[in-house]
Each structure stands twice: as C-alpha cells, then as structure tokens.
Length: 265
Image 1 (cartoon, rainbow, N blue to C red):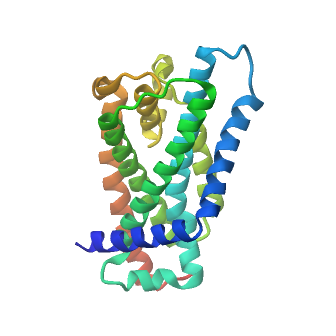
Image 2 (spheres, rainbow, N blue to C red):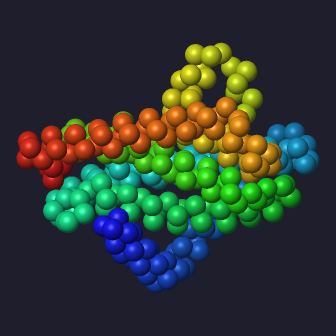
C-alpha cells in the first residue's frame, strides 16, 4: 500500500511539472529528436536506402535504451548524493515507507515518463527515415517491464555503494556511459562472438534487454522473442540483479545508519 501511495504522489507531482513547464518539456523532446537525427546523418555512410534506414533506426533504439539505463542508474547514484547534500535523504529515510519504497515509486514514475517521451521521439525518427517500427504491445510491454526490473536491481546496488562510499559519482558515470555504448552496439548476431565475450555481455543488465527490444521493434519477430536465448538470459538477469541489488542496498543502508553516516555527503 505504501508503494502505491508514494507512486500516486509522484504521478501527481510529475503531471503538475509537465503541465506547468510544458514548453520546456516540448523543447526537450525537440532537442532529443534533433540530437538523434544529427547523430544519424552526421555519421552517415553509404547509400540512403531501406536497409540503411532500418539499421539507423535500430541504432537509435539502442541509444534510447542506453539513455533509459543511464537515467535509472543515475537516479540511484547522483540522486542519492544530491539528496544527501540537501538533507532530503534523512527525511525520506524517516518517512513511514522507507528508502526502498520511495525509490521504487520514484523510479517507476520517472521510467514511465521517460519511456513515453523517448517513444514519441523514436517514432518521429522512424517517420523521418521512412523505416518500419513494429508495434507489438504485449511483448514490448513485457520486455520494458523486465528491463525496468533489471535496471532497478543494478541501480539499488549502485545506490548502496553510494550510501557507504559517498563520492563515487565519477566511477558510476563511467559505468553508465558504458551501458549506453553496450545498448547501442548490442545486436542479435552477437551470438557469433566468442563465448567468453558473450558471457561478460550477458552479465551486464542492459545487453539482452537491448537485443530483445531490437528483435521485436525492428525485426518484428513479435511473440517469438520469448523463445530467443536473449529472453532467457534477461529473465536470469532480472532474478539475479533484483535480488542481489535490493539485498546489497538494504545491507549497506543499515551499515551506513549504524555508523551514523547515512545523510553525510
């Protein structure tokens, strides 16, 4: 019940901000669309044909998935640091719902807003390039939900490290940038790579999510994605990172509280 109460409050806050600052929201979407198109045509090579347009839409999708991961993990690293600086972290901790429930609700609302925003921009990119973007609601919803849960688990682990070690912003920034690069580069034909490289790639929480989303939205395989090896690895990642991440966060939260450094920056 506490999760839904916090989520309702976050939804109301997000709606008020978007309504009050609608012009800034619109300008942000235009800038994001312009950035994607600029990257695509700025590094254009070869003839602009149907195959090229599909490849570039796939690259844009990978970049969007990477930005999504960048934002969620950043909420647990830079977000916690900012809350510690302003004293908000201790106030949230003292609330009846605790840090985990608050961050779950905040991250869920932010993720929904981010997905809706980037989906609109991706559709405009597809229209601009005259490429196909397949709309398969059920598998897309399942994949987005699993991607969110996977990144939340990883984000909680990063958040726990932030509570204990405080100044790890630069290190987490490198990790987040690496996740953008990996989501951008991940493709279904990666299974031809050596097993040790694929093993490392499967361990990173964004790889299989990016591959599955590209299979559904770009290649249009629909429900067949559920029998693809990347979907199985995604399920394993969700179970691993969600369990490990929340357990680590809870342990490090208690450790930081016992040492009296929870709200220190």
